[in-house]
Image (cartoon, rainbow, N blue to C red; front, side):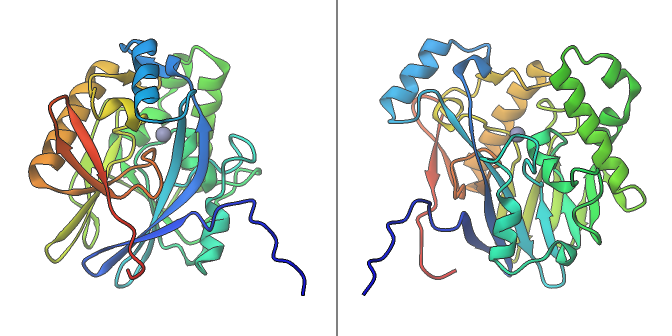
Length: 294
Ligand SMILES: [Zn+2]
């Protein structure tokens, strides 16, 4: 009898969470190695101490997640991960879609939280063509306008900012003619947009509701869970308007804690689902406990 091979990778980065009749599947796109220097208006040594005390990675690691919604009549992707934008450690979403039996042509709708490269990189191929041939792209009106604006490109200080803007524009071009821009209300039955401006001008969460159950997929409200739950005042250098991103984070954390609303996030630790509770200092994240049945 041959011996079994010792595993070298985790079981699939796929986790299901039921919201009433809608099934939400988290897909892990990989992890970034970051740095405490990414924090804005927050002391890096204090952030490192918080990570040390809570057994978190130093330097910090950020999960990148996307979500698949299985509604009564549609298959919906929320954000597209990194694709090939950040090397082979990221861009795993496409493999997990295959693992759950979904082909790119099966996706009816792609909802975007915003247009940073770790959210749209997987939506276009290296030739700039749409990866999801039948999908309608839905995003906040202000987000589409910001990345399309010539002034945004002219104001980009670095090559990496310029390349991020070009990628956003390539994405909008690839889905031209099948893009819907929203400012409020439902994108489709049971899924509404929640504007959360600051990280980017049109950054938005998606509120999924079915019967009495709800889930807020909040995009990039939190990048570093080990720091920003206890210290919501900690910003990120990625925030386009840091002065607006901080009160937006406070407002969303206050809302989900008060309403006991389940949340999921693109940079929350996989499998990302949980609740937010108030504590003596700021907030704490309470992860959903794994169950064998959905
Ligand atoms: Zn992000």
